[in-house]
Length: 143
Image 1 (tube, helix red, strand yellow):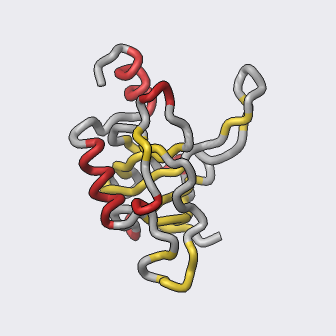
Image 2 (cartoon, rainbow, N blue to C red):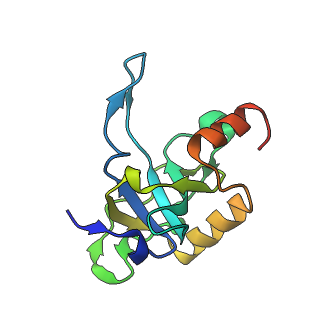
């Protein structure tokens, strides 16, 4: 596994946090796994502000992306294909605080320049929130 340190990340990297991405089952037996995160900026030595990509349009709140938002090969290694590219991808519409405990992190994809621009325009100044805080504000209709 090729792990990446937060300090080595660049805006637009799509990360998989190993601790965050384990498969588990909810109370109804539905298979759940973690989501991929887009790195935006360093917050501390171990935490960062990012966004979440999912394949679910949750009650019409997540924003549909398109294939032009994703690179198919890494920008710094053009012969190496990204393992995560567009696949019915949706953006959760807020900035999220991602913490070191979700890692270690693996770089699995990369947004294009237009993908980064789309993300920044779509999210604006919503957040950053910790996940539970985001869910609370969403439930209360404050987002």
